Length: 212
Ligand code: SAH
Image (cartoon, rainbow, N blue to C red; front, side, top):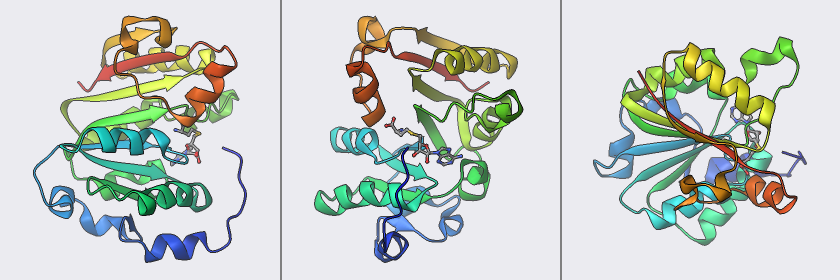
């Protein structure tokens, strides 16, 4: 994600009721925050939020939380949300490694990872959001049999992810190396990066893995 400092973005996030300064206070109480018993799905690294906003608009019976580490990016998602309010969507500015401080064990039904940063250098392997250490964090907050769905056009990152799913003992439910020309394309919701990279002709890879 290209970064540009957006003046006032921190203040804008602080002032919005869709966004949380101290999300840890809601740990174990997210359904209460949404005011229902519906399942909670999160996207980690949502960028400007096109994917999660589209999902929330088309699935009002599911609660969504978009997570992004940079306020200058997250503020773009917030602007969309302020313009088109969605009662089932909230946003959090945070680092993925703090997930267990924000969500209680089993509080999350599904996790979306879309076009996560590749961290190509070997010494940065552990920073990849599909590495075994991150899968271990997801294991802590997901329900048993909860799902991780991952999309990328980066083949080395995808191959690495297939390996770490296996190494972590998760069950690979399905995968494809060319999503848009596979049966997994049905009901696919495009992300910002997916639109950009598939327009360039890059095939999109996708996997769905289940928590052991
Ligand atoms: N999901 C979007 C954006 C992909 S770019 C899309 O598909 O269009 C990856 C995004 O993940 C960036 O906005 C980056 O800031 C965010 N990100 C990367 N590592 C993160 C982490 N550890 N915690 C939270 N967000 C992260």
